[in-house]
Length: 273
Ligand code: NAD
Image (cartoon, rainbow, N blue to C red):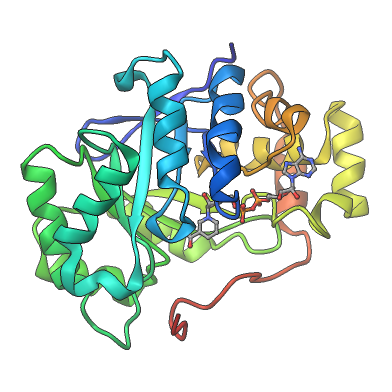
């Protein structure tokens, strides 16, 4: 069982710094993948209503024998539901088959809809009722966060954003930190493809005697990011957890930060899905 450190959210709740992401894990594979992850020692699962696999995630947690309070579960409000966040939250909880979630996020701000303040207000109510232990946002840029901070009472516990070598999001990380908002890095491995074959990264991985994926995850951990790499391959699920027994030097950290790349996913400012 690996020793994943915990970080403390701005309301005192503890979150394992490394978890397991299930985007694109098909619904009929979700229970098996989450079971493998829990067996390997993961205690933090990141899902979303939009992933269509909340039932499998919840089933794996309930069947695992791991105490509910020992697993940190995040799910997210989908974009079409900003005007009915309370009901959408209840549906997610029902699909998960849980009494509460640890973290509930607005998945995307969708500034064109301009309903995220209304959604967050409904989430504050779930927080006060103890149905969510913490609430936060995802894909929020500084102007979206500023508007939310001005118009709501609870500072988001996290902002979950695309972040990986080649797209280190330094300004947004700094803004989050200034406001006591922890940064969660989505697609922490840059979705695997080009990044993990980069020759500079491969060289550094050789220096520390680790795989490129472990080296990238270690970079995130040392930056203070929360990560939840996704894999359905048992050996990789285990490999991605083994990142707490080595360290990158300052020079190695800087070299990884400077790798080429850029945004892979949608731009939150213009996304219309
Ligand atoms: P990721 O960066 O975790 O990459 C996953 C891919 O990398 C896998 O499909 C596999 O091909 C490869 N991989 C994984 N482990 C490997 C290893 N050890 N060696 C070699 N290759 C490996 O990408 P992701 O799934 O996009 O992101 C992780 C999680 O972030 C998601 O599952 C989800 O929970 C979250 N996420 C959130 C948002 C959002 O809008 N909030 C968007 C995307 C992802």
